[in-house]
Length: 149
Image (cartoon, rainbow, N blue to C red; front, side, top):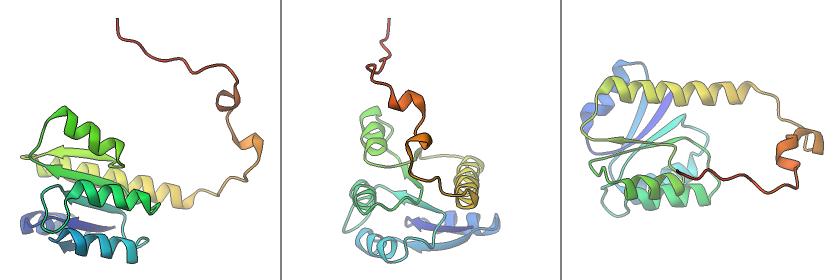
């Protein structure tokens, strides 16, 4: 499986390679965004640091999703505030890992993303008929909202 690591920490790349991943590493935000846009089908997962020169990880994530690129994005950062996590998840990040973290956890998350992408690529595309839309999505009833007690 192929990973784009947008981070300046070389130990991560070495660890992922030992686990069997093919890893491309970029440490500059603008260069990373260019690579992603030009090679959108080459990667199974993007591991993205927030603190990058020239363009931060949040902006990269946002622009990647605006280009309708669906590669899973795992964000790595030392920022653990809930607001930061929510902002990133709402702008298109698929997951978030706070530094310091265990390499085993990073590896498990990458493996899950890669397995998910592999299973999606093997599924036949559904035909765009009204039968492919679940009945719950076609309901005219208002959506029920969860409210905390």
